[in-house]
Image 1 (cartoon, rainbow over the protein chains, first blue to last red):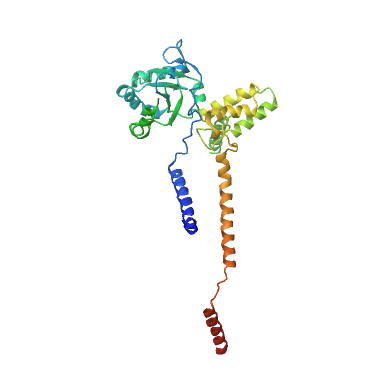
Image 2 (tube, helix red, strand yellow):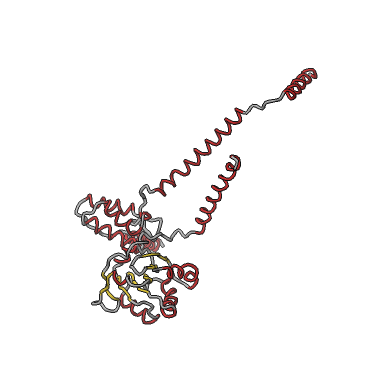
Length: 177
Length: 156
């Protein structure tokens, strides 16, 4: 290739890279933060079961098989919108979901599960938001994808719905080991 | 009428002040240094939920939690770095209004400078090349040029 050819090609390549970068920026969601915990195990915790105060769980519940950790609360309208789809994920697709009830009123939360159905295999009660703080939760709902070794592989901020499940989330979940 | 106006103003001021005081938590510190550190930290930590507020200014539930956590850590004698490390371990460098100099940050700072320098080099090079390249005329062209010059001089 002649020198002249590179003089034209290089600016073109630089321009294209810049264009792709800016184009992506145009459609990126500034409120979506990257999780620091990707690739790390779920932080240690001891939390009560939402139904039984004397039943406690620790981080070892996340070992064994891939599952979702869904952060929810009754004060969160989007959580209500998402709930029906979580039900169908659990019932129809047999996906294991652990619930983390975040800074909520226990009675209200139990009532909600009775009314709307309970998609959760285990439901942790995090009234003070202790585990949520360690997870870096900054809003609800948030859903963490955890592999069978208890390692966090992905975080989804916002509701899980049929569309984003189909497009992005299902492939991520099925790739978990 | 006047009394009515006064009453409304008073209510308005009371309402405003109750709104303002909502952002102020009551904290007791062991020393002025601790209080100073707490103020410094809450100003420097960004609320992950309400992104353009620091946690001192924000009333979001999460900001309150982070403030409380900061307070507890300061009260227990944590250093500034320890509190910052704690927050960054959970929310990433995003929580800091004064982020450390990571490669990505350096790129951000250096890129515009690099582009300016590069542009300057290109311009200098082009100018130099233009100065260097005197068009050489061959013997034939030289003759024609001289003829033309003569011609114009005669025409005057």
